[in-house]
Amino acid sequence: MIRALLATLVLAGPAQAADRIVSIGGAVTEIVVALGEADRLVARDTTSTFPPAVRELPDIGYARRLAPEGVLSVDPDLILATEGAGPPETVDLLRAAAIPFVEIPDGHDRDAVQAKIVAVAAALGVPEKGAALAADVDAALDAATAQAARGPRPRVMFVMSVQGGRILAAGRNTAADGIIRLAGGENAVTDFEGYKPLTDEAVTRAAPEVILMMAREGAEDMSDQVLSHPAIRTTPAAAARALVQMDGLYLLGFGPRTAQAVRDLSDALARAGS
Amino acid sequence: MVVISPDTAAAWDRALLARRTTVLLALVLLTVAACSLTTGAAGTSPWTVLADLLAGREVTVADRVVLFEIRLPRLAMGALVGASLAVSGAVMQGLFRNPLADPGLVGVSAGAGLGAISAIVLGGFLPAGLAAALGYYAVPVAAFLGGWASTLVLYGIATRRGRTSVATMLLGGIALGALAGALSGILVYMADDAQLRDLTFWGLGSLAGATWTKLAAAAPLMCLALLYAPTLARGLNGLALGEAAAFHIGIPVQRLKTVAILTVAGATGAAVAVSGGIGFIGIVVPHLLRLATGPDHRYLLVNAALLGAALLILADVIARIVIAPAELPIGIVTAVLGGPVFLWILLRQRGVLDL
Image (cartoon, each protein chain N blue to C red):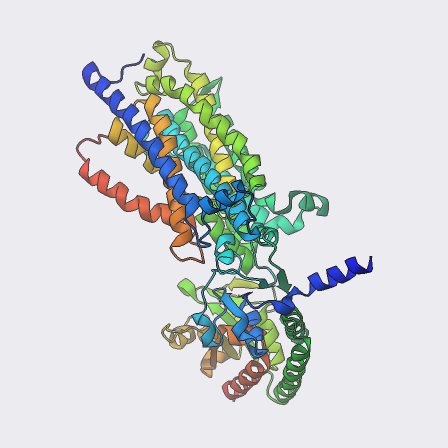
C-alpha cells in the first residue's frame, strides 16, 4: 500500500527529470524561459514567439490544432500546454503514448499570472524558483498598478482589427479588458463578452478617449487609417490622436512580463490622455 | 448491356482501357498506402516495428502509438473518405446529368456544416449528461445528423406524387444552402475567438483526428455505400440518355433516384462528419476518369473509388510532412494540387470535353 503510494508519488513527479519539453502557449513558454529552464525546451507552438531565441525551436503548429505525430516526432518527455490546447483526440493520443501532458490554467487577471507561474514551475520540478518568480512578478505588479492608480482613468477601446472598415472590439472577459483595467483604464465597451464587431454608432456612443491596438510585426502602420475611420473620427480619441499600439503577446499574454506591460500601458495612457 | 457509343469497336477499346486503368489505379493505391505508413514527422519505420513485433522484441510505446494509433487509422480513414467523396461525385454527376454536380448538391455539405458549427458553438449548452456521453464526438455526430436531415428535407421538397424532380432538387438545394449559410452566420456571430478558429479549421478539413473509434462509427456506412454504388452503374448509364428514354429501356428511374440520393447522403455525410470539409475530390476525380476512359459508369464508379482514395491519402501525406512537425489542413492540399492539374487537363481537352 505504502509502496503503491510512493510509486504514484514518483510517477506524479517524473517532470523532475524531464528535459525534452514541448511548450504550448506564448505565456507558458515565456514562464519556462523566465524560470531559467529554456535549455530543456525542444519545441514550441506557433504562438510562442518570445523571447526571440525560442523561435529557433521547431514549431509544432497552432495550439488548438496539434498534430499528434508532429508532437511525438520531437521525442518529448513532457508537454506543457495552455488551457484549451487540443484537439482532444491529439491529447488522448499523447497520453496513450505515455507522455505526461500538463495543462496550465489560463486567465486574464493577477491571480491567473500567479497560477500559471506556479503550475509551470511545479511541472518542471522547480517549485522554489516558481515561488520566487511569482513573488517578483507580484511585487512588480503591485508597484505598476499602484502607479497606474495615480494616473488618469481614460475610457479605452481595444480594437482587434478594422478589416473592411468593420471594427472588431474587445468586450468584457477578454485579455484586453483585463490589461486595460490593470493599467488603470476603463474598457469603453462593456455591452458584450469577447471580441465582436461594433456598428459605427456603437463606436460613437462608446466615446473612447484612447484606442488600443496590437502592433503587428512587419505590417504597415495602421494608425492613420484607424484614426480616419468614419466612426472613430467622431470619438475623443481621434480628436486627441490618442492611439496606442503594443505587441500582442506582451500586452495580452498575461505571462511574466505582465507588470512591465501594465507599466508601459499606463504610461502610454497617461501620455495619450494628456 | 447498355452501349453508350454507337461505335462498338471504340466502346470495346475503352472498356479494355478502363479495366487496365482499374489495375493501374489499384497498384497506385497500394503504393501510396505504403508511402502513408512509412512517411511522417516521427520517422518511425513500420518495417522495423513489424520485424521487432514478429521477433518478439520490445517496441517503444511512442513507435507503437505512431504506427497503430496514428498512421494506420489515418490511412484507413483517408482511403474511405477519398473513395466516398469521389464515388458520390460520380453518382451525382450521373444522376443530375450535370458536370458541376457534386455531393454538396443533395444538401449534405450545407447541413453537415451547420451541424458542425452548432456543435462547436452551442456545445456548451447541451445537457451535462448528453455532453458527457458524446464527448468530443459531438461535432461529427452533429455534422452527420445535419447532413442527413437536410438531404431528407430536400428530397421531400423535390418529390411530388412519387416523382422526384431533379431540377427542383437542384434549385431547392441552392435555397436550402443559403438558409443553412444564414443560420451558420448567426452562430458564427455568437462564437468566441477560439470557436472561430475551430470553425475555420473544420471547414478546411483534416484527417488528423482519425481514431479507431471514429472509424468504427463512420466506416460501416461508407463501406455500405461504396459496395452498393456499382449496382447503380447500369441505371446511371441509362439515365445518360434522358429520363424518358431510360424509363423506356426498363430502368426503374424513381427507385434509382431514391437509392442514389440515399447512397450519396450516407457516404458523404459520414465522410464530412469525420474529416470536415474536403473539397474538390468529388468534382475532379470523376472528370479526370471520364476524360481518360469514358463515361461508362460500370468502370467509372470503381475507378473513381480507387483514384479518390489514392489522391486523398497522397494529399494527407503531403499535408503532414510539408511543414512538419506542424500540419497543413488537407483541404488546402487537395485544392492546391487539384486546381492547376484540373485546369491544365481542361485546357488540353477543350475540344473533346463537350459539356
